[in-house]
Image 1 (cartoon, rainbow over the protein chains, first blue to last red):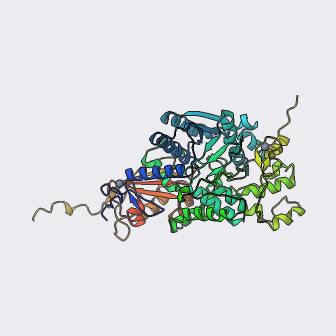
Image 2: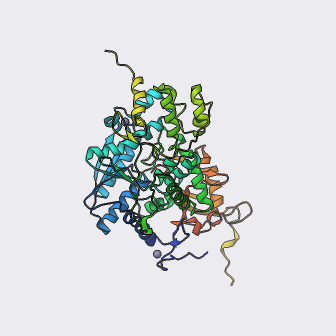
Length: 406
Length: 117
Ligand SMILES: [Zn+2]
Ligand SMILES: [Zn+2]
């Protein structure tokens, strides 16, 4: 067939077919439109204010690399007047971060941005390697995800930065919407669709400027702009690949590409019905930007391998319940429950559950319409429990730390 | 109209197409950690039809891929959802997807979107 021409400039050969509207675009027009749309998201939600320091959660992966590149471009083109800093987390997995941190270091040079790398050991007193030594390989992605979620906030705090942007894309949001919908967790559904979370007083504000960007277009943007990004599977997480909600999203896209944004929009619409929630839609409908949702530490916690919450997100609820019930949680035993397999976690007879707990677990999926958020008794992080998830996990870990004999 | 010199002798050699196949976004891990593969594959299939992307995918699974985890590349006989295919830098959806007939010198890129961000 003869090569199709770009629908916009009508001169160049079309290389991209947009998932959301099937528009055929050449490379140049695609890059321009992609950037324009992110700019639209930023301005209509009033994400940035002049003079603000903004940390980009940078993993060296495609999403955060595209985010850094696009934000640099837009900051210069539209004069946002923000000071962009790359913030990377080192989980302390020997060998694993070496290449991705090298990528981030190159990005820092390429984009002329300051780079700050914060280690789990600095923040929690444990590297992931030490965690794995203690609890084994299964389930450690949960630790990694919980620690990572706070790591960006804590790292930002250390730097005196009050705004962290992450590379969460439309596929990520769609996945979270579907998972929260499947478990009937409306508060979290509401939070997960919100473009801005956090920001009350001293808290760190978080936002996702790529919220409406298809993962496919992010990858294509990185490809056509020849961005320098890094991919690896977390070596502790072979199953990160097979997240079922993720597959569902990708299969939906295969059948009907616009489905991803449709799910995001539906999520926003449903979130609007949740009492007390004020979620956003794209602010261009002429409304003032919505007040930010509070950021509890259970939002969109992901597995490893990226700064993005992915796949194992909502498992936290199930796990949190068990943690509370099992208190000290026999951290070694935890690994059987916090694994990626969420069906395991919800099955009443999954091993190690106390009989009294079966009642709640068996009839799970309570519809909670509001949640009281407070501060973690140990670290002050915003949470709906007495202790935040990181501190709960650390509790268990510290009890299992190999005793040093003097 | 008389000079038909070439077509006489070369029957037994099956004609080939030379293409470059690239893997990125983490897929290279399934292909011996090698990003770029220069391949010379038969120009026609068993039925004598010009080979397509569909043929190539089979070929890659059976001949090129050493990793046993075929399902990370192909699912139900199709490229796994979440893997992008670019034919000479163009989205394969613009080129007929699996039915696209391979030409000499083509560059076929498989990019996974499934790995960390
Ligand atoms: Zn164009
Ligand atoms: Zn805490």
